[in-house]
Image 1 (tube, rainbow, N blue to C red):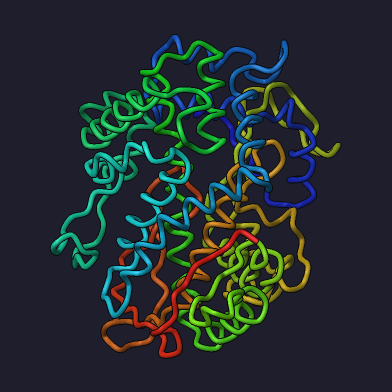
Image 2: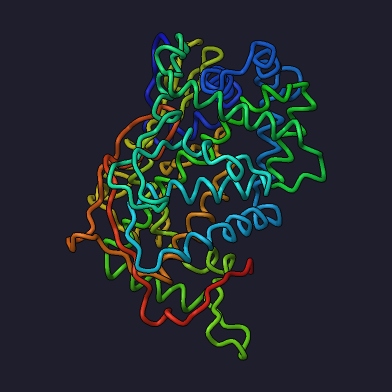
Length: 449
């Protein structure tokens, strides 16, 4: 699968044809092969994963766990509970930002890692009890008294070594830090699942669904822990740079900051209790439905910063769209960056950041930050709501500026992992947060309405 011919598809029409042929042009083989290389699960688990991989004789493990996660993360009460848990955890981080200097990417890594995992795995989240797990996934080169003010840029262990782990050649030698990190993470989540009590362990519907499906298929706690390493990659690796670039893009444009604040304050901020006029609430679901500029900004940053590629394995010869013969055993790739920068689709300013671009409808087939067809990311609703909510909370409460007094610049991205779409910045950005003058006596909260 990793050798031979690769067909590159960049036409929206042909992408649609690929999506319509999901049984022949299959995504699941990549999950099975690359998943084992990422997580290091054993051969018995690999056979479970490979069984009925493409629904040959009813749904197998991959299809069932995918469908369970899609249901758990679909818009509705389960998604709202996850988002609420994430925001309560984030509140402590946001409250500490008053007149504080931070390395923005490093701060975002720490905050999102803790808040997202707490929302998914509940109060018994392994990251809560063992701070070394955060170090295993995001290795911080230097820190100052536990605050997020380290001058050295973030260096990573597991995620940095991911490409070497994907080779699956003596990982203990070629990627020793990444290999040790994934073993540490897997061990912590093995213990989590060994103590998991269905229906009683407080956690998200997603964690419950994964445990139930894994147990139903006879996957041991040891290998459930290993599989969860891959889930962590999906939870954290794209979300963190997405929020980082969302903040830098917004705050680098004073007019955009002003317009987004006005939109939020008009549509989604309320003071429901007249006896407490200094307590304001951000209405999360109202924000999602009514803040079109905020959402357009999010869509546009993904158009420019999501630079991965969707892939399909060709299970048998197929004539794509009645024109192109694709041979069995080869691979189809659909690079996001090519379609996202095509001037014939997006216009002459295709390479420019235009936060209002998505206020008008566009060709959504060519817009693929979350993949498409059978590989459409099941976590896209949570990532979207999480990023919008955190960005809104910060924009409403704080001004943010470069500590050197220069205009905020947008750092270029560094491709580090073949398994992620939104790559991290080449270097961090040192910023100072300052509480807005009209917010100094305000208590901020939120409501899922």
